[in-house]
Image (cartoon, rainbow, N blue to C red; front, side, top):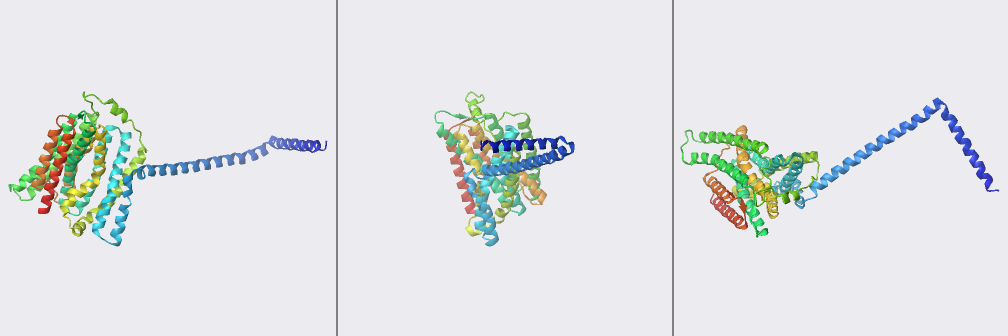
Length: 436
């Protein structure tokens, strides 16, 4: 009984309290005054929660994008060498180390530039994506060439672009064919013969554009010495740019399925297409933002690279020709070399050809004439006279590659032939550099 009495008293107090609240709520003025603060408090807490949640999601997206792009590849461990090169330039001014560190710093940036382009290709389609990949894949060479033009290093521009073409056609494609042939020894790998023949024709057209100014110069048949050669080079460059624009239009409009892999019967390889069902790792706008960031950073480091070429040549006692022909092409093509070999080992030779021959076609038909036009705008006498030896080397290289690609098949013997041709070309250029 003693325990029951307090409980009854407490229940009566609670009932009276609820009755008092109901009376207050029954009054309209009091009801509005009470519900309004509660509603305002709820709306304020809800909007504040949404804002905090949105900021957290934005931070998580940025961290995830940085982790995917920057920390997902071991080659990116070379990225700190770029800022280190700037510090070395500021505090020591040693051009040899500045050139070496900048060379290392640009290499992963060129690879990440290609990665961002590949991610953007998921949203633009295969044809436009392939063109974007070819364009930004050679962006490093074009940026370095423009800065070299700005400083009047015309031979550096010519030799670096020529080195990129030869290394792509002989070294890269040879290693890809050789590696793929070793993996698939029981069969001959096949690729789209029509695409290879078309690119070979464009390369021969580029050689024709380079051959005429060289012949005009060495036969001494110019009406006005120096001026006729430069005028012919600029006119030929405009024709080459127009031909390349026509080629792009043809790819975009008429040959949308041009780079679909083929099997032994010439039909579409469904197994390869099933293996290629990949999903993008970053969004479209993330890809665009990373393209802008990588291109800007490469442009910034290219200024230091070009400024340090002559000093590095003196301090290391290496000819500038060796730096231009051998070292500079490695910067922009290192990642492409590895990817071409990997795709060939997966029996995806069409992609390997697109990387090697497509890149060579774009440099010869777009990169070189584009530099001539840019030099024309800058007032630099950039021409298509690549000297007789370099032009003859390019002409023979294009003929060898065209003959080896004409049947649409590949094996390790063809790859070995191309690799040996690249070694011979390298040795000839090395002897020429030493003699010069």
